[in-house]
Length: 589
Image (cartoon, rainbow, N blue to C red; front, side, top):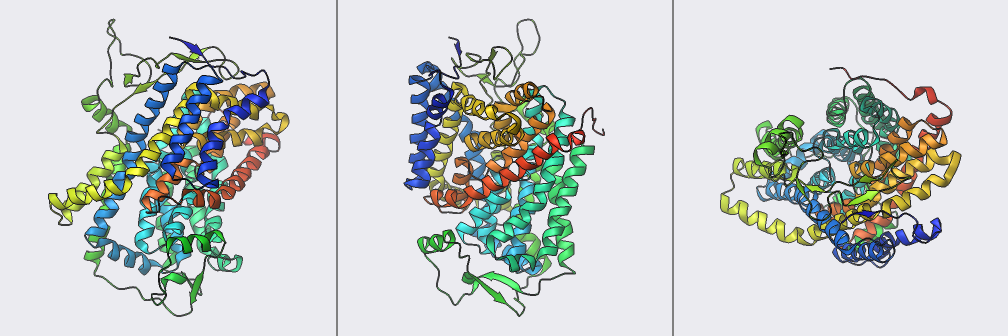
């Protein structure tokens, strides 16, 4: 069975675009408008996508069903498993009492909530993004901030905003590798161009984070620290992407920014310590409903302490022991993300990872099992592709090399080192699994929706609407990447979907294709905070499943505004500084 995607079934591009938007409208309408529980929203959105694909875009039923099943299977192993394992590690830290010590140790660096957000959500989150990606930073840093004493809403919203500037190099540079593969452009040029766009946002986002929490005057009280965080990360990001490689951009940026910020805070302190009002133990806890009402109303209530906030002091040995789970996690996700390690594990343990053809040559294309009926059965057509191109559909069951497995093993090792028995480890895991069950369903169906969108061509229909913007295409083409991430939850997937389209369109309009393909990835990172998958991960990790619509309404304008800033930067490169776009670069080996 072979099927060619149709991009204008109604003969009017605007009508075809409106119909293609129906799954998104249903998903976010239920999520943000009617406040339906996220797993039901995901099921409704995925069902709508399947019906639209079959009834209006004439996708065969079998192909629609298999693309949905492929997405669910991908979501379970690649995304939900990471979130479950990360929350499990957090639960182990709480179970053993180590999180209290961790909280006090961070408070020993700074009790100021503004600075803690910079250290944990931005710096530490960037490191985890570079090592693992795919939702891990939101889950891990979000759970970490809960342990520090942040309200769940604050932890979720702030981590979603923070997890933007580093996303283009997540999971050891996977989005850049994918972009180079699908666009056919030199990876070094794409990597360097992204590294000349996003460092500007790496300076803006820390400021944006703090301003989200507090007033303008309170933001400028910690302006020196914001500059240290932003410039240390941005300069490292620029240097590594332009002069070294695409693999360790975020990891090095996160490490340098953490070291620089901690060192700076040894010599500089804000005049006032900013804390949330609920940090005052004399105040009764707010209920989740009361807290969210206050947050959405814009009143991030605070108490300013003129005196010193004295955290409880622990011996260095106890502090090191308390940090053991996250130290082990960092080591595991870093090792698990190394291409050489991942390849070796896959060859040893992953079924159908390497297939030898009858002529003795290895099978080309991505590894894994061919998804029945779907693999190479769907063809992308012009103008999305220069010629009819089959869409591969191979599922690599990398059960051991999956990032989630690395996180899970880190949790097991941490629990044993902290004195938990195997029975208590199993009991804790069961509690985590029960608490996360609905979130895992939601994540899986979100990915099912995204894969139906991809294989049916609904994503291409929406993308083609952006190509009609003429001279303003550098701005709106940036939002094409934003749309791709908002739809799929992944900058990697957005680059795979729209990388080729960006190159074709930019060449037709006389715009540098390297710039526009890089803009797809750079603009996509700002869509990360509004995709349903990331929001579901955030609520699951911070134990507020059911509040996804509230969080979406809070972060959506941040996402659009930051996306517009990236669009303006790309416009400047396109028309004011075209010679600043690199060509013919080579990495230092």
